[in-house]
Image (spheres, one colour):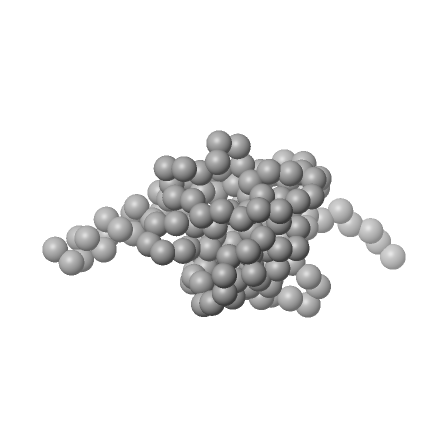
Amino acid sequence: MDFYLNPIPTVDIIIEMDTDKIILIKRKNEPKGWAIPGGFVDYGESLEEAAVREAKEETSLDVAVVEQLHTYSDPDRDPRQHTISTVYVASVLGGIPEAADDASEIGLFNEDNIPEKLMFDHEMILRDYFRYKKCISKDTDKMVS
């Protein structure tokens, strides 16, 4: 049997709360720090199913995937191993935000108060997300005018 070293698929979920806030978690396990909720895709699970499951496990919230933002694949994005993360934007269906599973804390943030140091490549992901949201807002304003 051949053995291949392949990247590991993961998902990250930008959970939108209210109009301008998102949820971040503080990781309980190494590497520790503030991060976008997410994790590894289980065998037999779609990326979207993994996103919904990880959101529930880490934030106690039921979410609906709204759209896919981007896929991030830098081999050095995670110091533990080569991962490829597909990032989703999700809305809350129900529940109360509560740290669970491998999250020790949970917080609501907007673009102006994101923690200074984020895990992995999450600073870049959130920069992309906020830039994308601004572009959508400008396009919506043009359509309404």
